[in-house]
Structure formats: C-alpha cells, structure tokens
Image 1 (cartoon, rainbow, N blue to C red):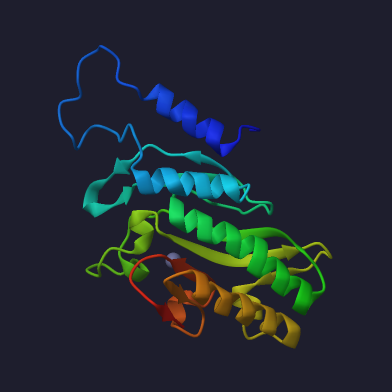
Image 2: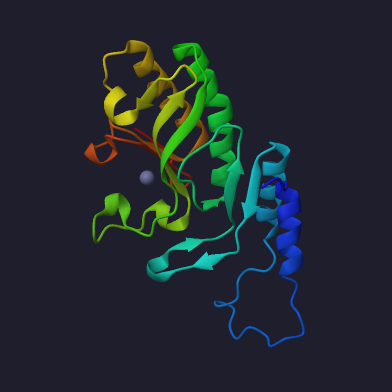
Length: 213
Ligand SMILES: [Zn+2]
C-alpha cells in the first residue's frame, strides 16, 4: 500500500458522492459520506506528520460502540502490531508519541532503536476493564490503544509485564519515561501502578482526563 493518506482520503470522498440511486432511508443507517471539518483537518495533520493512513467510514454498533472519524494507521515510521480503528486525533497523538517520545527514550535509556511496537489493539466493544455493568470503555469508541511491548534493533524484547518492575534499571527508566510522556500527550494513561488489569500494558486514551497512573 503506497497511497498517501491524502490520496486515500480523496478516493474515499469521491467514492461516497451520492449517485442517482435510491436515497438511504435514515440518517443513522447512512455512513458518513463527508467527514466533518475537524476530521478533515485531522487527516491533514496526519499527512503533515507523514503518517500513512486510510480513512474509515463512520460506523456505529450495538451497546453504544462506534468508530467515528476513525482511521487505520498504515505507516508511522515504526511498525505497530494489532492496530485497528482509531479516532483520528488518537492516531495523530499515538503516531507522534511513538516517533518522538518512544524513540527518544529508547535512544536515551536503551541506546537502541525500537523496531516494532506491540499492542493489544484499539477498538473493542466492552465495558471498562471488561467488567460487566461498568461504563463503556474508550476502546468501544475507538478512542484508546493498549501497548504491551517493544522490540529493539539490538534484538532485545521489552514487555510491560516482565520489565515494568524487572531487574534492568535502564529498562525500568525507559518504561516510566514513555508512560510519563504518554501522560503529556493523552488524556488518560494507565499502567501497572494503576491496578492489576494493567499489569501487562499501558492503556492510553483521549477520553475524560487528565488521569495519569
Ligand atoms: Zn485499554
């Protein structure tokens, strides 16, 4: 996939221009043909960052879940596993966090480069912490990402689970540095110090914050 985000965006827009066929019956069932101004501006922001992405048609699901103004990140300079739908602002913050914060912390603390970021994913229609009865997780709005580990150019693999409180002091510093930089870029960041649900990943979202733990 070598298309730029802008090209992909314009293809999506042109493919969504209404034809002379039957009109969609309701507003709810009609996919958003034209992203709103904020989303269009966000597409431009992603392109300005040289992030490759594909705009996603707005979707809503049962239980209040949605992917609105969302994109699929294709290339932010460092491969990331398991990325699905992300709201465009989340994708923009995440791409900058990986490129700037994670890579600079790896250089400073690990004297290496991150060659792959491991994630547990983005969109998931479930309550907070997967506990029935709790409010909808920001994952249900495609507005959160869970990061579980990193592969380095020197062959090391670092995971939140094994290394947050692991034996290597520099690795511990690296993980806390990227946690703290996440707190400056996202609304909510939860890691192993928050609770046992987060012992193996950093949860980062653009919901209601700020909250950093
Ligand atoms: Zn999460």
